[in-house]
Structure formats: C-alpha cells, structure tokens
Length: 280
Image (tube, rainbow, N blue to C red):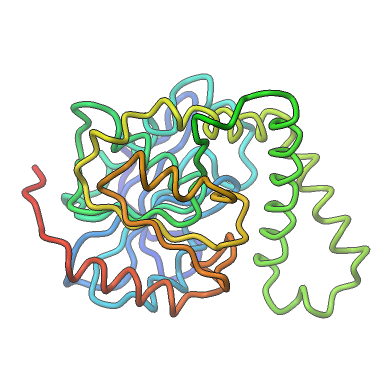
C-alpha cells in the first residue's frame, strides 16, 4: 500500500490509502467528520469520489470515506477482465482504516453493493446499505436484442444527463450543440465495453440471491428513472425482503447531486431506525 497522503483534488477529501497494482488503482479518501457511523461511498460508472461531496455535506453526523474504484471516469475498462464489481469493491473496503457500518452506492456502484451483499460469506458485512438509482431486471424481462437496444438508448440518456449534471450551472447557458458534442465525445470514449459492463451487470441481477440478504437496505430512485422503470422496482422489493424501495416523482438518476437535501433526509431517517450489528 502506498503511504497515505493528502488528496490531490479538493481539500474537502483527505487521501488515507492507495494501492497501485499492475492492473488497476484503488484509493480511499476521508471527508471531514469524526463522529457517527462509518459510511463507505461507492460511485457509479464514469463517476468519482468527489461527486459525493454535496451529499456528505448535507448528511451530517457520519464519518464518510469515498472509494475510488476502477470504473471511475476516464477508465479504459480493462478491470472487467480481472474481477467483478463486487470483487473490486471488497478490495477497496480492505483499504478503509476502520470497520464500515453503511455501504452507500449510486447506480453501477449500487449494483456492486447489491452483488456484494448477495455473495455468501462476504467480508465487510455492513449494518445497513443505501442504494441510489440501482438497476434490476425482473425474471419476466427476457434478455433479447430489443432489451439490449432499449438499454443502450437508456445508457446514452444517462451519460448525457451525467454530463449535464457534472457541468452544473454552466449547462444552463451552454450552446446546445456544444453540449451535444461533449456527450458524443463521452460516449465515444466509453465505447461498447463500457456499455456492456453495465448491461451484463443489469441482466445478471436476476440471478443474485437477494432473498438471502439480511442487511437492512434502503433503495431510492426516481419514478421516471429507467434504472427501475415499469415493474422493476416492485420486482426488486419482492425479490429482496430486506429492502425498502421508494420512488419519487422529482428524483432523477443523479438524485444525490440534484435532490441532495431530500436524499440526505431520507438516509438519515433510515439510519436512525436501523439497529447496529457487530462488524468485525
């Protein structure tokens, strides 16, 4: 493990651990705060640890650690050949300097958490989990070319939304053609391997042993978010009795960045009513 150092990014985060292997890099950064439950933050595809800052600032009373995972923004997508998302998540959790009480994921990161929870005898079992905008495939949803094409169209929309959210206020005044060009560049760089990494994770959710998960889990998503569109939310709730699934009309796919106050309030209330467990 590399010697802990200050993060090169915003001063809000302090790098506490980093490992650089022959294939991938993993790192953990700590947010300010010394009291409350330990929360590990699992970013989505093409995301970053710093994307959690608004939510962490709103979610007071916790010790937050942002995990920097191989599916970060700008990655070459070689990591999929050397481990599942849950495998990489467990390796990152090994770097967190104290036991993790809560796993909090977004989108692809939520599904890494879901896979981790559903894996028998997994280490780092938390007291609670929060999944923001995960995706789930009911068994009734056949894996065929129309599903592939619909998922690809949805993927493109999510990437476009992610570019817009990442730009913040600048997106409001930006020339639409410039914004479209930025989205096209992002999609071209991510390429088919990036999409297939998500698509295979999506179609495989049906096979997860979610009925065996005992960790209390809060699932938050938008009613119009394609990740849990149609009957996907009710199917996930039925498949995973330990999960409380809530959808809101005003939540978007990036609700942790755009509906930050509401998301923080829901998480805080959920954690307040969730009993702690011993986490070795």
